[in-house]
Length: 40
Image (cartoon, rainbow, N blue to C red; front, side):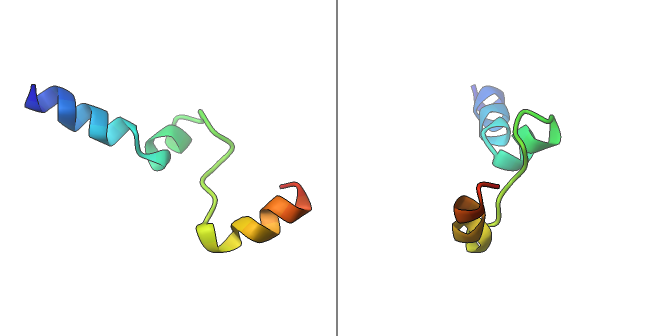
């Protein structure tokens, strides 16, 4: 069970998803407002 939880905890990271190109990238929270306004 510990192995399953460790694997799950690793895979919910936004960096894990971005490294597999499941997302358009990871947005730095300090830049979010400007990206949201510009339409990214």
